Amino acid sequence: MDAVTTAPSSAEISRIFAEEYGRCVATLVRTLGDIDLAEEAVQDAVTVALTRWPADGVPPNPGGWIVTTARRRALDRLRRDAVGRDKEARAAREEPPPEEPEEPAEEGPVHDDRLRMVFTCCHPALALPARVALTLRLLGGLETPEIARAFLVPEATMAQRIVRAKNKIRAALIPYRVPRDADLPDRLPGVLAVVYLVFTEGHATATRDDLAAEAIRLGRLLAELMPDEPEVLGLLALMLLSEARRPARTAPDGSRVLLADQDRARWDRALIDEGLDLVRRCLRRGRPGPYQVQAAINAVHVSAPDAASTDWAQLVALHDQLLALTPSPTVALNRAVALAETEGPAAALVIVDELAERLDRYHLLHAVRADLLRRLGRDDEADRALDAAIARADDPDDRALLVARRSG
Image 1 (tube, helix red, strand yellow):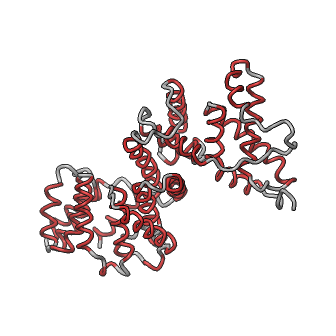
Image 2 (tube, rainbow, N blue to C red; image 1 turned 135 degrees about the vertical axis):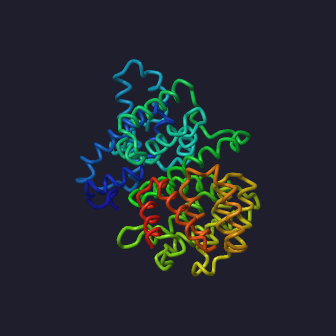
């Protein structure tokens, strides 16, 4: 049987590169000890692939081919650089034996390398924006302009952020390893926070589903590598259950559709089933955490056949649990929304008014308050609350939805 398949297009090679980039860079950082050199070597290998694969076909293990070719390219660079002699000695220990055939031997996946890279990118010594940028660059394979566009900063700013983060890793001797068991509880939440931040950035913007997909891919990677960590499973479940609703979040005219008004037949049932299974696995472990509880909240919503059938009492109980784990005014606001369905809008309005000072700049507080006032027949106050929400809404889609409610 031939070692290659049909000849690929450049688009297919680019897709393979995007899928394999993080693993290849992570593996080479271990063997070369240098992030920049690893990235450059992978880029060199992809250049070779663009030349060879259209004629020869895609190797059975394209990631292994890229890693082996990249290492050889890196060794060539190090041999030409006297400063790299020490690094060459480390990398040479991983070089294939001389009798190996000319075609590079393909390496299997080295999952721990990617996990080490996740914790390196998310080290607490790095600022949070730098952690996000490095995670997307080194594990997601996103180019600097893409990351800059996603977070609405100039490309030069993002490039400097990435360079400074790499320099910090080098200067501070940040270890390329998974923390010891004793340190893991303190480090893991930071990693999960970065992945969730990437997801929320993509999920909040209809045009950035690629960021949400990348966060889910990283979540799957963490769940694969750390299957006994319930908060990892909880985060993945939360992202899947949220992403499952994406097809129904936008009307044909592009306007935002609220959860209660969404066509639930458009929800992605495969993602829902996978997310619900993860929630059940978390429950069996009996070690609840914030991501698990948020996933359970989403599970209640997606399990209801329609908005009227939502188990609001269960949602109040889950928000009580979430408040105990992570007290915050936004969690309290979400609890008030659920409470309005069990105890009425007057009881919920008391809580919302208590939160008004802390959440005055948050447009959703005023939107929730407007809804509660409307249900109580206090229309003039509701209009003023809605005007306040419109004035504070930064997202154009959110503002358009509020304006439509105000005019309706």
